[in-house]
Image (cartoon, rainbow over all chains, first blue to last red):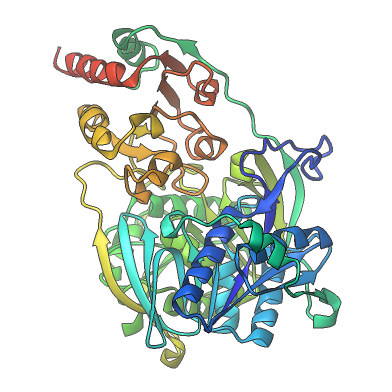
Length: 249
Length: 324
Protein backbone atom coordinates (compact mmCIF):
# COMPACT_ATOMS: atom_id res chain seq x y z
CA UNK A 1 0.00 0.00 0.00
CA UNK A 2 1.37 3.38 -1.01
CA UNK A 3 -0.11 6.44 0.64
CA UNK A 4 0.45 10.01 -0.49
CA UNK A 5 -0.06 12.71 2.15
CA UNK A 6 -0.11 16.33 0.93
CA UNK A 7 0.73 18.77 3.73
CA UNK A 8 0.71 22.56 4.09
CA UNK A 9 2.79 24.96 6.15
CA UNK A 10 0.57 27.33 8.15
CA UNK A 11 0.92 29.72 11.11
CA UNK A 12 0.52 28.00 14.48
CA UNK A 13 -3.23 28.04 15.26
CA UNK A 14 -2.59 30.01 18.45
CA UNK A 15 -0.98 32.87 16.48
CA UNK A 16 -2.73 36.23 16.57
CA UNK A 17 -3.04 37.17 12.92
CA UNK A 18 -2.43 40.80 11.91
CA UNK A 19 -3.21 42.20 8.49
CA UNK A 20 -0.51 44.45 6.95
CA UNK A 21 -1.51 48.11 6.72
CA UNK A 22 -1.68 48.03 2.90
CA UNK A 23 -3.90 44.91 2.90
CA UNK A 24 -1.41 42.94 0.82
CA UNK A 25 -0.94 40.11 3.29
CA UNK A 26 -0.48 39.21 6.93
CA UNK A 27 2.44 40.13 9.19
CA UNK A 28 4.74 37.12 9.36
CA UNK A 29 7.35 38.38 11.84
CA UNK A 30 7.22 36.29 15.02
CA UNK A 31 4.97 33.71 13.37
CA UNK A 32 5.71 30.12 14.33
CA UNK A 33 5.09 27.82 11.37
CA UNK A 34 3.64 24.33 11.75
CA UNK A 35 2.09 21.53 9.70
CA UNK A 36 -1.57 22.33 9.15
CA UNK A 37 -3.24 20.48 12.09
CA UNK A 38 -5.60 18.51 9.84
CA UNK A 39 -2.67 17.44 7.65
CA UNK A 40 -0.89 16.24 10.78
CA UNK A 41 -3.90 14.01 11.42
CA UNK A 42 -3.53 12.77 7.82
CA UNK A 43 0.14 11.89 8.37
CA UNK A 44 -0.81 10.02 11.54
CA UNK A 45 -3.55 8.06 9.77
CA UNK A 46 -1.14 7.04 7.01
CA UNK A 47 1.40 5.89 9.61
CA UNK A 48 -1.27 3.79 11.33
CA UNK A 49 -2.05 2.04 8.04
CA UNK A 50 1.68 1.35 7.64
CA UNK A 51 1.83 -0.10 11.14
CA UNK A 52 -0.86 -2.61 10.18
CA UNK A 53 0.57 -3.25 6.71
CA UNK A 54 4.37 -2.92 7.12
CA UNK A 55 5.05 -3.19 3.40
CA UNK A 56 3.41 0.21 2.95
CA UNK A 57 5.15 3.41 1.95
CA UNK A 58 4.11 6.85 3.19
CA UNK A 59 5.14 9.75 0.94
CA UNK A 60 4.55 13.33 2.11
CA UNK A 61 4.28 16.08 -0.47
CA UNK A 62 4.10 19.86 -0.22
CA UNK A 63 3.65 22.62 -2.80
CA UNK A 64 5.52 25.67 -1.59
CA UNK A 65 8.72 27.57 -0.97
CA UNK A 66 12.08 26.19 0.27
CA UNK A 67 11.14 26.94 3.92
CA UNK A 68 8.43 24.28 3.67
CA UNK A 69 11.18 21.65 3.95
CA UNK A 70 10.90 22.20 7.70
CA UNK A 71 7.36 20.78 7.83
CA UNK A 72 8.24 17.93 5.47
CA UNK A 73 11.14 17.03 7.80
CA UNK A 74 8.72 17.05 10.73
CA UNK A 75 6.46 14.59 8.88
CA UNK A 76 9.50 12.43 8.11
CA UNK A 77 10.42 12.54 11.79
CA UNK A 78 6.91 11.35 12.66
CA UNK A 79 7.63 8.31 10.49
CA UNK A 80 6.89 9.10 6.83
CA UNK A 81 9.30 7.36 4.43
CA UNK A 82 10.18 10.13 2.00
CA UNK A 83 9.15 13.60 0.96
CA UNK A 84 8.54 15.60 -2.20
CA UNK A 85 8.60 19.41 -2.33
CA UNK A 86 7.23 20.98 -5.48
CA UNK A 87 8.88 24.39 -5.44
CA UNK A 88 6.67 27.26 -6.37
CA UNK A 89 6.46 30.97 -5.64
CA UNK A 90 3.16 32.46 -4.56
CA UNK A 91 0.53 33.36 -5.43
CA UNK A 92 -1.11 30.09 -6.31
CA UNK A 93 -4.80 29.36 -5.95
CA UNK A 94 -6.41 26.14 -4.76
CA UNK A 95 -7.05 24.93 -8.30
CA UNK A 96 -3.36 25.24 -9.19
CA UNK A 97 -2.29 23.36 -6.06
CA UNK A 98 -4.80 20.61 -6.87
CA UNK A 99 -3.46 20.34 -10.44
CA UNK A 100 0.13 20.10 -9.17
CA UNK A 101 -0.84 17.42 -6.64
CA UNK A 102 -2.74 15.50 -9.31
CA UNK A 103 0.42 15.52 -11.40
CA UNK A 104 2.53 14.25 -8.47
CA UNK A 105 -0.09 11.55 -7.85
CA UNK A 106 0.05 10.52 -11.51
CA UNK A 107 3.82 10.00 -11.13
CA UNK A 108 3.73 8.38 -7.68
CA UNK A 109 0.67 6.19 -8.33
CA UNK A 110 -0.47 5.89 -4.68
CA UNK A 111 -3.32 3.61 -3.61
CA UNK A 112 -4.64 6.25 -1.27
CA UNK A 113 -4.27 9.98 -0.75
CA UNK A 114 -4.99 11.32 2.74
CA UNK A 115 -4.99 15.05 3.51
CA UNK A 116 -6.55 17.56 5.89
CA UNK A 117 -10.12 18.68 5.23
CA UNK A 118 -9.05 22.31 5.33
CA UNK A 119 -5.97 24.42 5.91
CA UNK A 120 -6.40 26.75 8.84
CA UNK A 121 -4.90 29.73 6.99
CA UNK A 122 -7.15 30.17 3.95
CA UNK A 123 -9.96 27.96 5.34
CA UNK A 124 -10.92 26.92 1.81
CA UNK A 125 -11.71 23.22 2.28
CA UNK A 126 -11.24 22.48 -1.45
CA UNK A 127 -8.01 20.64 -2.30
CA UNK A 128 -9.02 17.03 -1.50
CA UNK A 129 -12.27 17.24 -3.43
CA UNK A 130 -10.60 18.92 -6.43
CA UNK A 131 -7.80 16.38 -6.42
CA UNK A 132 -10.29 13.48 -6.39
CA UNK A 133 -12.11 14.94 -9.39
CA UNK A 134 -8.94 15.64 -11.37
CA UNK A 135 -7.82 12.04 -10.84
CA UNK A 136 -11.32 10.64 -11.46
CA UNK A 137 -11.16 8.99 -8.03
CA UNK A 138 -13.80 8.59 -5.32
CA UNK A 139 -13.61 10.86 -2.28
CA UNK A 140 -14.52 10.60 1.38
CA UNK A 141 -14.28 13.98 3.09
CA UNK A 142 -14.41 14.80 6.82
CA UNK A 143 -13.37 11.28 7.87
CA UNK A 144 -13.63 10.21 11.50
CA UNK A 145 -12.87 6.53 10.90
CA UNK A 146 -11.05 4.71 8.09
CA UNK A 147 -10.96 0.96 7.46
CA UNK A 148 -9.09 -0.81 4.69
CA UNK A 149 -9.84 -4.36 3.58
CA UNK A 150 -9.75 -6.33 0.33
CA UNK A 151 -8.84 -3.38 -1.84
CA UNK A 152 -11.72 -1.31 -0.51
CA UNK A 153 -11.88 1.59 1.86
CA UNK A 154 -14.75 2.21 4.26
CA UNK A 155 -14.94 5.66 5.78
CA UNK A 156 -17.19 7.12 8.48
CA UNK A 157 -17.80 10.81 7.73
CA UNK A 158 -18.83 13.70 9.96
CA UNK A 159 -21.82 15.25 8.21
CA UNK A 160 -24.70 17.51 9.28
CA UNK A 161 -26.94 15.73 11.74
CA UNK A 162 -24.98 12.50 12.10
CA UNK A 163 -22.41 10.12 10.71
CA UNK A 164 -22.38 8.78 7.15
CA UNK A 165 -20.53 5.67 6.08
CA UNK A 166 -19.19 5.41 2.53
CA UNK A 167 -17.26 2.69 0.80
CA UNK A 168 -15.14 2.75 -2.37
CA UNK A 169 -12.57 0.66 -4.21
CA UNK A 170 -8.97 1.95 -4.10
CA UNK A 171 -7.50 4.26 -5.21
CA UNK A 172 -9.29 7.16 -3.51
CA UNK A 173 -8.95 10.41 -1.62
CA UNK A 174 -9.74 10.89 2.08
CA UNK A 175 -9.84 14.21 3.94
CA UNK A 176 -9.47 14.11 7.70
CA UNK A 177 -11.69 15.52 10.40
CA UNK A 178 -10.74 16.29 13.96
CA UNK A 179 -11.66 13.04 15.65
CA UNK A 180 -9.95 10.64 13.27
CA UNK A 181 -6.92 10.25 15.51
CA UNK A 182 -4.50 12.03 17.80
CA UNK A 183 -1.21 12.67 15.96
CA UNK A 184 2.00 11.43 17.56
CA UNK A 185 4.96 13.64 18.37
CA UNK A 186 8.20 13.08 16.52
CA UNK A 187 10.58 11.08 18.70
CA UNK A 188 14.25 11.98 19.05
CA UNK A 189 15.36 8.86 17.10
CA UNK A 190 12.68 9.79 14.56
CA UNK A 191 14.18 13.26 14.18
CA UNK A 192 17.67 11.78 13.73
CA UNK A 193 16.44 9.31 11.12
CA UNK A 194 14.50 12.01 9.26
CA UNK A 195 17.75 13.80 8.37
CA UNK A 196 18.81 10.86 6.24
CA UNK A 197 15.47 10.31 4.51
CA UNK A 198 14.97 11.42 0.92
CA UNK A 199 13.50 14.87 0.33
CA UNK A 200 13.17 15.43 -3.39
CA UNK A 201 12.67 18.93 -4.78
CA UNK A 202 10.85 19.46 -8.05
CA UNK A 203 10.83 22.95 -9.61
CA UNK A 204 7.24 23.52 -10.66
CA UNK A 205 8.30 24.75 -14.14
CA UNK A 206 9.43 21.24 -15.01
CA UNK A 207 5.84 19.97 -14.70
CA UNK A 208 4.65 22.07 -17.64
CA UNK A 209 1.30 22.96 -16.09
CA UNK A 210 -0.77 26.09 -16.60
CA UNK A 211 -0.92 27.56 -13.11
CA UNK A 212 -2.34 31.04 -13.73
CA UNK A 213 -4.54 31.74 -10.71
CA UNK A 214 -8.27 31.92 -11.41
CA UNK A 215 -9.02 33.17 -7.90
CA UNK A 216 -7.23 36.42 -7.10
CA UNK A 217 -7.03 38.07 -3.71
CA UNK A 218 -7.54 41.79 -4.19
CA UNK A 219 -6.93 42.81 -0.58
CA UNK A 220 -7.11 41.64 3.01
CA UNK A 221 -8.76 43.52 5.85
CA UNK A 222 -9.41 43.03 9.56
CA UNK A 223 -13.04 42.47 10.51
CA UNK A 224 -14.62 45.04 12.82
CA UNK A 225 -13.99 44.15 16.43
CA UNK A 226 -16.81 43.39 18.82
CA UNK A 227 -16.88 45.57 21.92
CA UNK A 228 -16.70 43.87 25.29
CA UNK A 229 -19.94 44.39 27.19
CA UNK A 230 -20.86 44.64 30.83
CA UNK A 231 -20.39 42.44 33.83
CA UNK A 232 -23.40 40.98 35.56
CA UNK A 233 -23.38 39.90 39.18
CA UNK A 234 -26.13 37.28 39.37
CA UNK A 235 -28.24 34.91 37.33
CA UNK A 236 -31.32 36.98 38.18
CA UNK A 237 -29.72 40.17 36.86
CA UNK A 238 -28.57 38.41 33.69
CA UNK A 239 -31.98 36.97 32.85
CA UNK A 240 -33.62 40.30 33.59
CA UNK A 241 -31.20 42.12 31.23
CA UNK A 242 -31.66 39.51 28.49
CA UNK A 243 -35.39 40.04 28.80
CA UNK A 244 -35.72 43.80 29.15
CA UNK A 245 -32.53 45.25 27.62
CA UNK A 246 -31.37 42.79 24.95
CA UNK A 247 -34.95 41.59 24.35
CA UNK A 248 -33.86 38.09 23.38
CA UNK A 249 -35.84 36.24 26.07
CA UNK B 1 -24.74 36.21 -19.18
CA UNK B 2 -24.63 36.34 -15.43
CA UNK B 3 -27.08 33.54 -14.70
CA UNK B 4 -26.74 31.80 -11.35
CA UNK B 5 -27.49 28.12 -10.72
CA UNK B 6 -28.32 27.40 -7.07
CA UNK B 7 -27.88 23.84 -5.83
CA UNK B 8 -30.85 23.12 -3.54
CA UNK B 9 -29.93 20.64 -0.82
CA UNK B 10 -32.87 18.70 0.59
CA UNK B 11 -33.61 15.45 2.30
CA UNK B 12 -36.43 13.43 0.75
CA UNK B 13 -38.12 16.62 -0.43
CA UNK B 14 -37.90 18.76 2.68
CA UNK B 15 -35.18 21.32 3.14
CA UNK B 16 -33.61 23.43 5.85
CA UNK B 17 -33.18 27.18 6.26
CA UNK B 18 -29.68 26.82 4.75
CA UNK B 19 -31.22 25.96 1.36
CA UNK B 20 -33.28 29.16 1.39
CA UNK B 21 -30.08 31.04 2.26
CA UNK B 22 -28.52 29.68 -0.93
CA UNK B 23 -31.58 30.79 -2.91
CA UNK B 24 -31.44 34.28 -1.43
CA UNK B 25 -27.70 34.64 -2.08
CA UNK B 26 -28.36 33.37 -5.62
CA UNK B 27 -31.08 35.99 -6.13
CA UNK B 28 -28.76 38.74 -4.87
CA UNK B 29 -25.89 37.61 -7.10
CA UNK B 30 -28.17 37.31 -10.15
CA UNK B 31 -29.51 40.83 -9.52
CA UNK B 32 -25.98 42.25 -9.28
CA UNK B 33 -24.80 40.40 -12.40
CA UNK B 34 -27.96 41.18 -14.42
CA UNK B 35 -28.75 37.50 -14.75
CA UNK B 36 -31.42 35.02 -13.72
CA UNK B 37 -31.48 32.84 -10.65
CA UNK B 38 -32.10 29.17 -11.50
CA UNK B 39 -32.45 26.39 -8.95
CA UNK B 40 -31.62 22.71 -9.31
CA UNK B 41 -32.77 19.85 -7.09
CA UNK B 42 -32.05 16.13 -7.46
CA UNK B 43 -32.64 12.92 -5.57
CA UNK B 44 -35.49 11.29 -3.73
CA UNK B 45 -38.62 13.46 -3.76
CA UNK B 46 -36.79 16.32 -5.49
CA UNK B 47 -40.08 17.22 -7.17
CA UNK B 48 -41.58 18.14 -3.84
CA UNK B 49 -38.64 20.38 -2.95
CA UNK B 50 -38.79 21.93 -6.42
CA UNK B 51 -42.49 22.75 -6.10
CA UNK B 52 -41.87 24.54 -2.82
CA UNK B 53 -38.71 26.34 -4.01
CA UNK B 54 -40.48 27.62 -7.12
CA UNK B 55 -42.37 30.04 -4.86
CA UNK B 56 -39.26 31.99 -3.82
CA UNK B 57 -38.90 34.44 -6.70
CA UNK B 58 -36.53 32.39 -8.85
CA UNK B 59 -36.69 32.21 -12.67
CA UNK B 60 -36.81 28.44 -13.04
CA UNK B 61 -36.41 25.20 -11.11
CA UNK B 62 -34.79 22.17 -12.72
CA UNK B 63 -35.34 18.68 -11.35
CA UNK B 64 -32.49 16.38 -12.36
CA UNK B 65 -33.48 12.75 -12.68
CA UNK B 66 -31.24 9.69 -12.69
CA UNK B 67 -31.13 6.53 -10.55
CA UNK B 68 -27.55 7.37 -9.50
CA UNK B 69 -28.79 10.59 -7.90
CA UNK B 70 -31.29 8.94 -5.53
CA UNK B 71 -28.99 9.62 -2.60
CA UNK B 72 -26.33 12.33 -2.44
CA UNK B 73 -22.85 11.17 -3.48
CA UNK B 74 -20.15 13.62 -4.57
CA UNK B 75 -19.02 11.86 -7.75
CA UNK B 76 -22.49 11.42 -9.30
CA UNK B 77 -23.71 14.87 -8.26
CA UNK B 78 -20.58 16.62 -9.56
CA UNK B 79 -21.00 14.94 -12.94
CA UNK B 80 -24.67 15.78 -13.22
CA UNK B 81 -24.35 19.38 -12.05
CA UNK B 82 -21.34 20.11 -14.24
CA UNK B 83 -23.21 18.90 -17.32
CA UNK B 84 -26.28 20.94 -16.38
CA UNK B 85 -24.26 24.11 -15.67
CA UNK B 86 -22.70 23.85 -19.14
CA UNK B 87 -26.02 23.17 -20.86
CA UNK B 88 -27.69 26.12 -19.16
CA UNK B 89 -24.69 28.36 -19.85
CA UNK B 90 -24.70 29.84 -16.36
CA UNK B 91 -21.87 31.99 -15.01
CA UNK B 92 -22.12 30.89 -11.37
CA UNK B 93 -22.96 27.74 -9.46
CA UNK B 94 -23.75 28.39 -5.81
CA UNK B 95 -24.58 26.38 -2.69
CA UNK B 96 -24.54 26.96 1.05
CA UNK B 97 -21.42 25.77 2.88
CA UNK B 98 -23.11 22.84 4.61
CA UNK B 99 -21.42 19.44 4.87
CA UNK B 100 -22.88 18.57 1.45
CA UNK B 101 -22.02 21.96 -0.09
CA UNK B 102 -18.43 21.75 1.14
CA UNK B 103 -18.10 18.17 -0.14
CA UNK B 104 -19.61 18.79 -3.57
CA UNK B 105 -18.71 22.25 -4.80
CA UNK B 106 -14.89 21.95 -4.99
CA UNK B 107 -15.28 18.71 -6.95
CA UNK B 108 -17.71 20.48 -9.27
CA UNK B 109 -15.31 23.43 -9.64
CA UNK B 110 -12.47 21.10 -10.65
CA UNK B 111 -14.74 19.42 -13.20
CA UNK B 112 -15.75 22.78 -14.66
CA UNK B 113 -12.18 24.16 -14.54
CA UNK B 114 -13.75 26.95 -12.52
CA UNK B 115 -12.37 29.14 -9.76
CA UNK B 116 -14.00 28.63 -6.42
CA UNK B 117 -14.58 30.90 -3.42
CA UNK B 118 -15.55 29.17 -0.16
CA UNK B 119 -17.80 30.51 2.60
CA UNK B 120 -18.59 33.83 0.93
CA UNK B 121 -20.02 36.38 3.40
CA UNK B 122 -20.66 39.30 1.03
CA UNK B 123 -21.33 39.81 -2.68
CA UNK B 124 -19.90 43.11 -3.96
CA UNK B 125 -21.44 45.16 -6.77
CA UNK B 126 -18.39 44.87 -9.03
CA UNK B 127 -18.43 41.07 -9.08
CA UNK B 128 -15.95 40.51 -6.25
CA UNK B 129 -16.70 38.50 -3.11
CA UNK B 130 -15.69 38.76 0.52
CA UNK B 131 -14.70 35.62 2.39
CA UNK B 132 -13.13 35.00 5.80
CA UNK B 133 -9.70 33.47 6.27
CA UNK B 134 -7.57 32.67 9.33
CA UNK B 135 -10.54 31.69 11.51
CA UNK B 136 -12.39 34.87 10.61
CA UNK B 137 -9.52 37.14 11.68
CA UNK B 138 -9.04 38.27 8.10
CA UNK B 139 -11.61 39.23 5.47
CA UNK B 140 -10.35 38.73 1.93
CA UNK B 141 -11.84 40.44 -1.12
CA UNK B 142 -11.44 37.98 -3.98
CA UNK B 143 -12.26 37.94 -7.68
CA UNK B 144 -12.70 34.95 -9.92
CA UNK B 145 -11.47 35.18 -13.51
CA UNK B 146 -12.64 31.87 -14.98
CA UNK B 147 -15.68 31.92 -17.32
CA UNK B 148 -17.58 29.67 -14.90
CA UNK B 149 -17.36 30.39 -11.21
CA UNK B 150 -18.29 28.28 -8.19
CA UNK B 151 -18.98 29.48 -4.67
CA UNK B 152 -20.35 28.42 -1.33
CA UNK B 153 -21.97 31.01 0.93
CA UNK B 154 -21.86 31.06 4.70
CA UNK B 155 -25.30 30.31 6.12
CA UNK B 156 -25.07 33.00 8.80
CA UNK B 157 -24.16 35.78 6.36
CA UNK B 158 -27.38 35.85 4.31
CA UNK B 159 -31.06 35.86 5.22
CA UNK B 160 -33.28 33.06 3.94
CA UNK B 161 -35.30 33.84 0.79
CA UNK B 162 -38.94 34.86 1.19
CA UNK B 163 -41.83 33.63 -0.99
CA UNK B 164 -42.45 36.12 -3.80
CA UNK B 165 -44.40 36.44 -7.04
CA UNK B 166 -45.84 33.74 -9.25
CA UNK B 167 -44.38 30.22 -8.90
CA UNK B 168 -41.51 29.60 -11.33
CA UNK B 169 -41.79 26.93 -14.04
CA UNK B 170 -40.41 23.50 -13.10
CA UNK B 171 -38.54 21.51 -15.71
CA UNK B 172 -37.64 17.84 -15.40
CA UNK B 173 -34.42 16.77 -17.09
CA UNK B 174 -32.56 13.50 -17.37
CA UNK B 175 -29.17 13.93 -15.75
CA UNK B 176 -26.11 13.30 -17.91
CA UNK B 177 -24.06 10.74 -16.01
CA UNK B 178 -21.45 8.17 -17.05
CA UNK B 179 -22.27 5.42 -14.52
CA UNK B 180 -19.00 3.55 -15.14
CA UNK B 181 -17.05 6.43 -13.61
CA UNK B 182 -19.00 6.23 -10.33
CA UNK B 183 -17.08 4.48 -7.56
CA UNK B 184 -18.62 5.77 -4.35
CA UNK B 185 -21.10 3.64 -2.50
CA UNK B 186 -23.39 4.75 0.31
CA UNK B 187 -23.36 2.33 3.25
CA UNK B 188 -25.21 3.89 6.17
CA UNK B 189 -26.34 7.08 7.85
CA UNK B 190 -26.48 7.17 11.64
CA UNK B 191 -28.60 10.16 12.52
CA UNK B 192 -27.86 11.96 15.77
CA UNK B 193 -31.22 11.80 17.51
CA UNK B 194 -32.19 15.00 19.23
CA UNK B 195 -35.40 16.79 20.12
CA UNK B 196 -33.51 20.06 20.23
CA UNK B 197 -33.31 22.51 17.34
CA UNK B 198 -30.44 22.11 14.84
CA UNK B 199 -27.35 24.06 15.80
CA UNK B 200 -27.30 26.10 12.61
CA UNK B 201 -31.03 26.83 12.69
CA UNK B 202 -31.60 27.71 16.33
CA UNK B 203 -32.59 31.13 17.67
CA UNK B 204 -30.68 30.40 20.89
CA UNK B 205 -27.53 28.30 21.32
CA UNK B 206 -26.12 27.11 24.63
CA UNK B 207 -22.52 25.92 24.30
CA UNK B 208 -20.22 24.20 26.76
CA UNK B 209 -16.46 23.96 26.95
CA UNK B 210 -13.76 22.16 28.82
CA UNK B 211 -14.98 23.87 32.02
CA UNK B 212 -17.90 21.42 32.08
CA UNK B 213 -15.33 18.75 33.01
CA UNK B 214 -17.32 15.74 31.68
CA UNK B 215 -19.95 14.55 29.24
CA UNK B 216 -22.12 13.73 32.23
CA UNK B 217 -22.05 17.39 33.31
CA UNK B 218 -23.17 18.42 29.81
CA UNK B 219 -26.29 16.34 30.46
CA UNK B 220 -26.98 17.30 34.06
CA UNK B 221 -25.85 20.95 34.10
CA UNK B 222 -26.05 22.37 30.58
CA UNK B 223 -28.91 20.48 28.92
CA UNK B 224 -31.58 21.61 31.42
CA UNK B 225 -30.72 25.23 30.58
CA UNK B 226 -30.83 24.51 26.84
CA UNK B 227 -34.18 22.77 27.22
CA UNK B 228 -35.65 25.57 29.32
CA UNK B 229 -34.64 28.04 26.60
CA UNK B 230 -35.65 25.79 23.69
CA UNK B 231 -32.04 26.18 22.58
CA UNK B 232 -29.66 24.10 20.49
CA UNK B 233 -26.67 22.59 22.22
CA UNK B 234 -23.14 23.43 21.08
CA UNK B 235 -19.60 22.81 22.26
CA UNK B 236 -16.07 24.07 21.94
CA UNK B 237 -13.39 22.06 20.18
CA UNK B 238 -11.78 21.44 23.59
CA UNK B 239 -14.98 19.75 24.80
CA UNK B 240 -15.13 17.63 21.63
CA UNK B 241 -11.42 16.74 21.90
CA UNK B 242 -11.98 15.68 25.49
CA UNK B 243 -14.77 13.36 24.28
CA UNK B 244 -17.58 15.08 26.24
CA UNK B 245 -19.85 15.41 23.17
CA UNK B 246 -19.93 14.37 19.50
CA UNK B 247 -18.13 16.50 16.91
CA UNK B 248 -21.31 17.61 15.16
CA UNK B 249 -21.92 19.91 18.12
CA UNK B 250 -18.62 21.68 17.54
CA UNK B 251 -18.85 25.44 17.01
CA UNK B 252 -15.77 27.07 15.50
CA UNK B 253 -13.41 27.46 12.56
CA UNK B 254 -13.31 23.74 11.95
CA UNK B 255 -16.84 22.99 13.11
CA UNK B 256 -20.10 24.84 12.56
CA UNK B 257 -20.48 28.58 12.21
CA UNK B 258 -23.53 29.93 14.01
CA UNK B 259 -25.04 33.38 14.47
CA UNK B 260 -28.12 32.99 16.68
CA UNK B 261 -29.95 35.82 18.42
CA UNK B 262 -28.53 34.62 21.71
CA UNK B 263 -25.34 32.61 22.26
CA UNK B 264 -24.53 31.46 25.79
CA UNK B 265 -20.93 30.25 26.23
CA UNK B 266 -20.45 28.23 29.39
CA UNK B 267 -17.00 27.21 30.62
CA UNK B 268 -15.49 28.17 27.26
CA UNK B 269 -12.22 30.10 27.37
CA UNK B 270 -12.69 31.56 23.90
CA UNK B 271 -9.84 30.27 21.72
CA UNK B 272 -9.47 32.03 18.35
CA UNK B 273 -10.87 29.02 16.59
CA UNK B 274 -14.04 29.00 18.75
CA UNK B 275 -14.66 32.74 18.37
CA UNK B 276 -14.53 32.20 14.59
CA UNK B 277 -17.70 30.14 14.86
CA UNK B 278 -19.88 32.40 17.01
CA UNK B 279 -18.72 36.00 17.12
CA UNK B 280 -21.42 37.15 14.71
CA UNK B 281 -24.15 36.13 17.16
CA UNK B 282 -26.48 39.02 18.00
CA UNK B 283 -26.12 38.78 21.78
CA UNK B 284 -23.34 36.86 23.50
CA UNK B 285 -23.36 35.77 27.12
CA UNK B 286 -20.28 34.21 28.71
CA UNK B 287 -20.11 32.36 32.00
CA UNK B 288 -16.58 31.58 33.13
CA UNK B 289 -14.78 31.63 36.44
CA UNK B 290 -11.60 33.01 34.86
CA UNK B 291 -11.95 36.77 34.62
CA UNK B 292 -9.15 36.88 32.02
CA UNK B 293 -10.82 34.40 29.63
CA UNK B 294 -10.72 35.77 26.04
CA UNK B 295 -14.41 34.90 25.59
CA UNK B 296 -15.23 37.98 27.70
CA UNK B 297 -13.71 40.24 25.02
CA UNK B 298 -16.64 39.41 22.70
CA UNK B 299 -19.37 38.97 25.33
CA UNK B 300 -22.19 41.50 25.74
CA UNK B 301 -22.92 40.11 29.17
CA UNK B 302 -20.08 38.68 31.23
CA UNK B 303 -20.69 36.57 34.29
CA UNK B 304 -17.54 35.71 36.23
CA UNK B 305 -18.76 32.76 38.24
CA UNK B 306 -18.47 29.06 38.95
CA UNK B 307 -20.61 27.53 36.22
CA UNK B 308 -21.75 24.65 38.41
CA UNK B 309 -23.47 27.18 40.64
CA UNK B 310 -24.40 29.80 38.03
CA UNK B 311 -25.97 27.56 35.36
CA UNK B 312 -28.59 25.89 37.61
CA UNK B 313 -29.49 29.37 38.90
CA UNK B 314 -29.82 30.62 35.35
CA UNK B 315 -32.06 27.69 34.48
CA UNK B 316 -34.23 28.51 37.47
CA UNK B 317 -34.42 32.21 36.58
CA UNK B 318 -35.40 31.42 32.98
CA UNK B 319 -38.10 29.08 34.29
CA UNK B 320 -39.43 31.84 36.54
CA UNK B 321 -39.45 34.34 33.69
CA UNK B 322 -41.41 31.96 31.46
CA UNK B 323 -43.89 30.80 34.04
CA UNK B 324 -44.20 34.03 36.04
